[in-house]
Amino acid sequence: MMAERRRAFPLRYYVIIMVVIILFAIAPIIAIIAADAIATAHGCSLNEGGASVCMVMGSDWSEALYAAFVLPWLLFLTLPLAGGAVLVWLVILLIHYVAWRRSTEVSS
Image 1 (cartoon, rainbow, N blue to C red):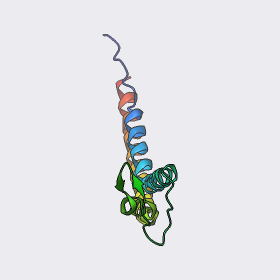
Image 2: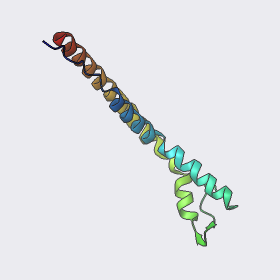
Image 3: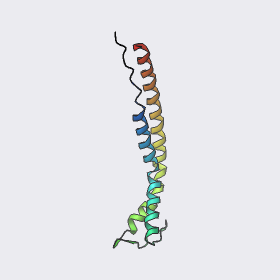
Image 4: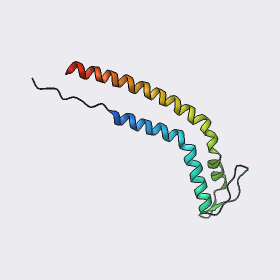
């Protein structure tokens, strides 16, 4: 009989899911960095106290930049959710890996 070809463990899918979880967790930080970069590039003042006029390409972006600047408060929601998602991800990864190892040992 021909030897069965051993299938590799699909780790790349788990890595992709972990990257998505991490991006979800740090999305508010990315938003504040982008808002600060846009405001600085156009000579605008950005603070938590309120929106001040910021003209970007001929229109006032002050409200959008202010909203992005105070978005890090959302970290109080995204970080615990991402932490829970990482725990679920880890449990599923371990269960899948153990099942995969058992199935490859039996077929060998």
